[in-house]
Each structure stands twice: as structure tokens, then as C-alpha cells.
Length: 286
Ligand SMILES: NC(=O)c1ccc[n+]([C@@H]2O[C@H](COP(=O)([O-])OP(=O)(O)OC[C@H]3O[C@@H](n4cnc5c(N)ncnc54)[C@H](O)[C@@H]3O)[C@@H](O)[C@H]2O)c1
Image (tube, rainbow, N blue to C red; front, top):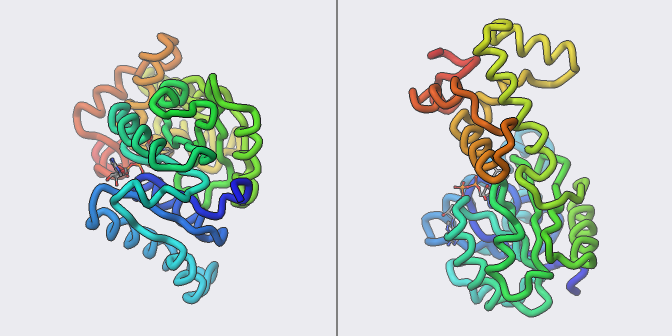
């Protein structure tokens, strides 16, 4: 039964939690999602329903299919409901102490064979593993946003993760219809390790007035065949989110490639956060 992972626990029903819950539920598995209170459970369901309604409008899923997916999901506020979960995916707020406290409670509540994984982007998986009773059964599963649509999932091998656990996770990711990429536990894992220094270089090039913001995006879209220009991408990610990610990576490595460029810090300080604030590199206000 453990191999099939028929009962999946998800911790946190926010942006990532809702996407992960949907992805797992639409594979026909039962999902128990833990939140801090009923209002957040309701908000998670509302977010999921809205996303699925978009799929209904585009003819990707029927109304009956949407309802069936939602029927696979149960929202809870008590960790004891995770006792029969074969895998628990942690997707709560990106704060080390919050994650560690919850993970140690979950490790006690879950069965001895359960796998526990974290979706952290910027914390060390090896460090979080020391909060659970069986670090050899702990790893990272790094989903991309929105989880139901993005095709790749990084399977992060922490220092003490069992090789058999990595194999189980690769099988699980494949069963969800996604492509697994196994990576080492280092800041940024693989995708963000490559993306963050690149985005920092782009911001510096713009600050150095190599070209206008629009021309930088056009050059990368047309010259490299990317779907989106890098400055449009930072606006979409949020300048504050990128600044946080690059600062954490810099603190962990002291690698100058991760040092936040001065313009990025100034724009965040000025409240120019990208699309969500109406002001960024390519959005009005700058
Ligand atoms: N947003 C992204 O693009 C993205 C991408 C990949 C990974 N991540 C990672 O996913 C995780 C979640 O990020 P998010 O963007 O979904 O955050 P979010 O703020 O949207 O959601 C976090 C949720 O966790 C809940 N929570 C906090 N403490 C809890 C507890 N003790 N028990 C149960 N629920 C609790 C909060 O109520 C909230 O609903 C973070 O570790 C983040 O680094 C985010």
C-alpha cells in the first residue's frame, strides 16, 4: 500500500498547498489537508474551486469531474487525522521554526512507514529533517507554481535520505503525471540555483543601462527563444519574493552571484513589487 500512496496528507492549504492538493486529488488519491483553522480550509477550497472552474470554462474538466476531485479532499485542523497517510507533503509558511514544530508533531502522528517531504524553496531540507524522528524517510519535493500545470518536480535528496525513499518519490511524482528531477540539497536546488543569479545579472544590466527594460525582454525572448522576458518574469514572481530568495541563498553560500543587486533592494524598499503592486520593471509606476 505504501508504494501506491493512496492516502496523501498535505500541510497548508495556501497557494502551493491548494495546487498540490488539486494535483494529488485529480490522480484519484484521497487527500487530507491540514490548516490552522476552518476559515483557511474554506479559503483553500474556494481557491481550488476557482482554479477548477477555469478548467471547466476551458473544457479541460467537466463539472462532474471537478466535483469528484473536490470529493477526494478533506480539510482538518488536527494532526491525528494524518495517522493513515502514506506520504505527508509539507507546504506551510516559509519559516523554519513553524515548519520544524509542525514536522515534529506530524512525525509523531504519522505511521512509522510514512514518508514526510517538504516543499520549501529556500530552507535546508537536511536541517528540516532533524525535526522528524526518521530523517532517512524525509526528503524535499519542490513543486512549481501552479502545481497542477507545471510539469517538473524536483526530488531533493537530503544528506540522510534513504536511496529507496528517493526511488519511491520518483515513482510517486511519475504517477502524478509529472517529470521528476533528482537534485542535491543545496541553496536553490537546481532550477532556482540557475535562475536566481541570471535574474540578478539582468537587473544589474538594466541598472547599467545596457538597454531599456522592454528591449532586454525582447532580446531574450527572440534571441534565446524564451516564452517570457526576464524582467516580465521578475514582475510576475514579485520583486520582494525574488529579493527574499536571493538574500537567503546569499546568506547560505556567500556566493556573490546571489548578492541582491542594489536596484532590486531599492525598488522593494520603495514598494515597487511587480504585478501585484502595479509597479515593477515592466509595469506602470517605474
Ligand atoms: N509560492 C510559490 O511560488 C512557491 C513555489 C515553490 C515552493 N513554495 C514553498 O511552499 C511553501 C508554502 O508557500 P505558499 O506560497 O503556498 O505560502 P502561503 O502563505 O500561500 O500558504 C501557507 C499556508 O500555511 C498555513 N500554515 C501556517 N502554519 C501552519 C500550521 N502550523 N499548520 C497548518 N497550516 C499552517 C497558513 O495558514 C497558509 O495558509 C513555502 O515553503 C514556500 O517556500 C512556494
